[in-house]
Image (cartoon, rainbow, N blue to C red; front, side):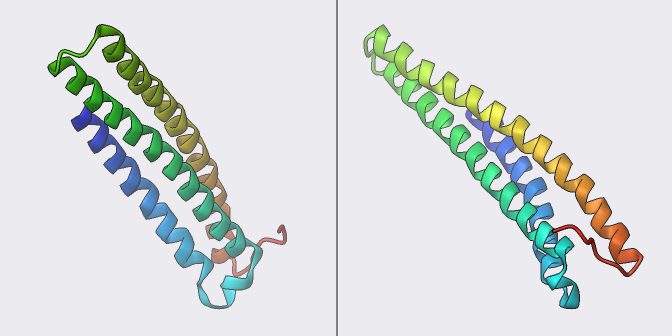
Length: 130
């Protein structure tokens, strides 16, 4: 559980981090920085970062409780305690998976919106929406 979770979180972090960095750069790009598109890119960067943190927190907690569960088993703690800790680990993992799904959906929405930003920039105009 630990190894696959860590690599999964790393992959998600790299993917989201790349987009967050690009949106941050977009929002600071010269005269474009004051446009509604730039403001929206900045907002998207913060939204994705917030969702990424929620996801990572759940996965971190799942990993922590899984390790505690393994420790309880190794130490021969009562079955009820072992099950309680592993149940918490499972719940955190489920919450993490749900958070990842929400993050993936948000990321797709932001990427679709970004395509509009790029089209506007290519045409030398900015969005009129705020």
